[in-house]
Length: 114
Length: 119
Image 1 (cartoon, rainbow over the protein chains, first blue to last red):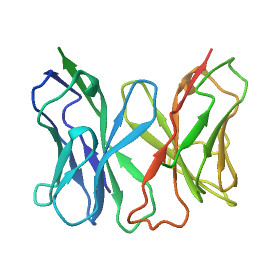
Image 2 (image 1 turned 90 degrees about the vertical axis):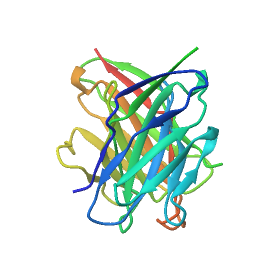
Image 3 (image 1 turned 30 degrees about the vertical axis):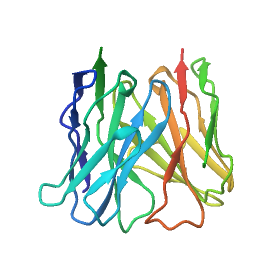
Image 4 (image 1 turned 30 degrees about the horizontal axis):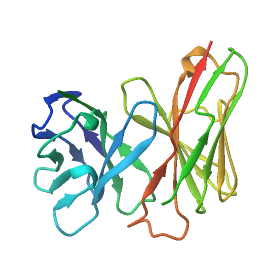
C-alpha cells in the first residue's frame, strides 16, 4: 500500500532563515508527488508537483522540492522564509496508473517567527 | 484559473439533523470530484470519490448511508451528512479535476472547505 510520511509535525523558524520540510513516501509503483499549502480555515493550494523529468522542481512563493527516488523522498525547501509562509504544508502522492486520488501525509506546521 | 466553490463555509447544526454541503466547479467541468475530511491538526482523509452520473465510491470505513454523495451534473457534487452527531464535527473539503485533461497532468482544484459543528 502507498503511504506518505512527514516526520516533522511542527517546524519553527525565524524569518529569512532557510527551511526544509521533509517528506518520504512508500509505493511499489511509480507515483506523482505534490506539495500543498493550507492557510487557516481554507482549502489547499498547490505549491509544486513532480511528474517526471528534472528531479528539482520549482514552485510558487519561492519554494522548491527535490525528488530522490533512491531515498523515496520529496523534501520541500525555501532559502529564506517570510512571516506569510506560516501555514500547514502537506505532501501528497498520486498513483501514476490510477485516477486523481491523492494520499496525503499528516502535514507539517511551519511557524515563522519575526 | 479553475475555481472550486464550496458552500457553506461554516455551518452549525443540532444533533440529529442533516446538513448538505455543495461543491461546484465554477469555470470547468468535473467528471470526478473528491470529498475529504480533516480533523483538527490532522491530515486530509479521503472519504469518497464522486462520479458524475453514477454512484460514489467510498473509502473503507466510511458509512455510505451516513455520508450521502450526489453528483448530478458536471459542475456540482453534494455531500449530505445525515442525522449528524457531534463526532461528525469536522472540516470537509472537496476537490475536482477538469474533465478532458489527462490524469498525468490533471491538477486537482480544492474548495475552501466547510467547517461543520454539530451541537
